[in-house]
Length: 45
Image (cartoon, rainbow, N blue to C red; front, side):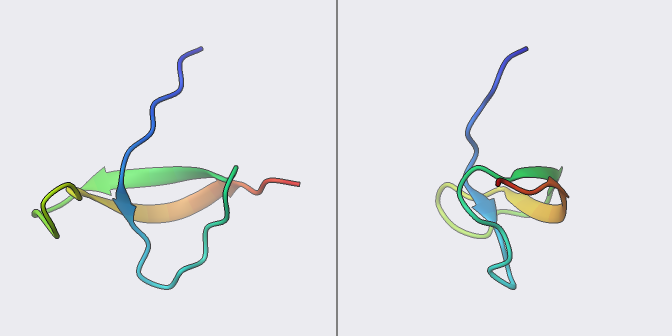
């Protein structure tokens, strides 16, 4: 299984390092951010 790191916009600052999140593509929010966090699927312990 592969892991990829994306720069994702987390509007409410909910995610923590190590969390697995569901993301969706959106309009460009900054130079590198083109993804928005939809939900947190698995919290890091």
